[in-house]
Amino acid sequence: MKRKATAVWLGSGKEGKGQLSTQSGVLKQVQYSYTSRFEEGIGTNPEELVAAAHAGCFTMKLSFNLTDVGFIPDRLETGCEITFEGGIITSSHLEVKARVKGITEEKFETAVKDAEKNCPVSKLLNTKISVSYKLNQ
Image (tube, rainbow, N blue to C red):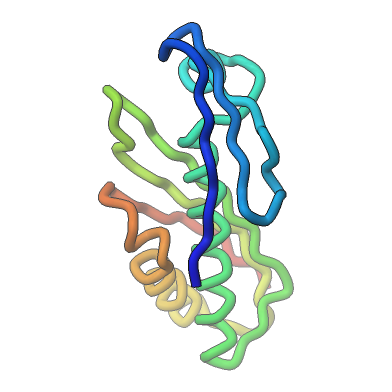
């Protein structure tokens, strides 16, 4: 399986602007720029997209892990905060809120730690990854 995205940039790094599109069409000529990346401008930025990818990938892997040990989650919600400093992504912190009936804290933590290490986006990122969670049953 292969997935594709395209970036088009016009102009200089600071004054220029770009558009991002994905194969699925979910992103279609979505604006990004210096101001959307380094200030509070309108549009997206690569770090925000990495955060969405990591949150989505981790959450799906966690769901698979829980199902594998006999628990189907009622709800998993993961936020991801990417830290971008000095031109480098230095960390990705995942924060999970989960509702999984009947699971012990120990089994849930095992599933979380495995997802943290083994979701494909975690494996791709060469940065510090951390997870915190709140489990409600």
